[in-house]
Image 1 (tube, rainbow, N blue to C red):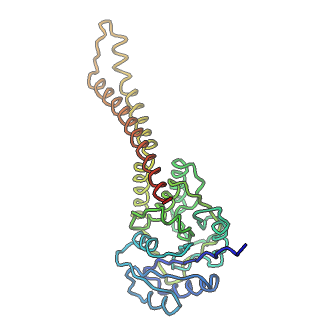
Image 2: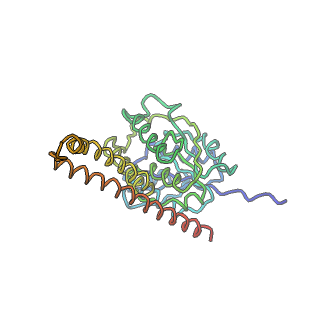
Image 3: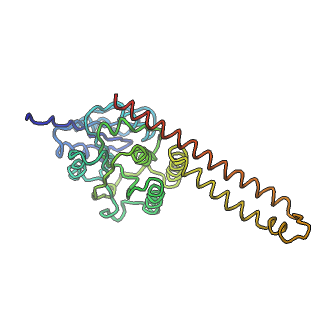
Amino acid sequence: MPPAHAPTIAVVIPCYQEALTIGKVVADFRRELPAAHIYVYDNNCTDGTAEIAAKAGAEVRREKRQGKGYVVAAMFEQVQEDILVMVDGDDTYDASQIHSLLAPILRGDADMTVATRQNDHADKSFRPLHLAGNQLVCSIIHWMFKSRVTDIFSGYRAFTRESVRQIPITAWGFDVETELTLQALYRGQVIQEVPAPYRARPEGSFSKLNTFSDGLRVLLRLFLILRSYKPLTFFGALAVVFFVLGLAVGALPVYDYVTDPAHYVHRVPSAILAAALMILSFFSLGLGLILNSMNLRLLEIEKLIAKR
């Protein structure tokens, strides 16, 4: 039997103002993956990041739309290698871990691999509330998809070309990692996590992540994907809430009716509100069932198109 074709690998590095670290990041991945094609995506840098990356041997491409989500969408559309490795340009991830990250994909055991950072990180590598926020979002995702994802915000990932083709990117900011995971889980892709060390940023380098605004954006992304891709879960939960509220509000009018000799309801506004809540409950459940059926049919069509 002739030897199998060795898959081509691309290392793609989204960058905004990373002049201090990008040269080392490119050199480290060039050392670990000498045959890989390294792309640096310049997202309107003004500090010389693009020039330093080019001198280090990377192919520099520019994405004029500001935001990491736009950069990732451009990378997925333009880069054609068999396997894509995405890593931040801030030198917080260890390039030597790339072999562990690629191993499940090369074996055919995973569509996406994610470097998890919680077990081995520097004292100042995470901002306050980031670990708690990570755990909260992962808990919600586990409830949604019955997955075991532990690091939703990791920027060090590897993908097969088939995985990338199936993932539409609609996020424009730092919520893109959340969307990558959710879109992959919705489409039944296999995600494996690989523990990897996470370093603090070098002195003089600064994070572009805003804890509160980007955290709210992540929660909004979760809400939108839950509503769109898990409508039965979303509207079913609403139905339960409306149903419980309806029972609570309607308890007193029912008590009036049962205990009054003339069966007169004294709390008419409460009775009307309880009836409205019950109607909303059944309406939400019905809407969730209809949208869930539509989603299943659309997913079937998507899979049929992908096979052609």
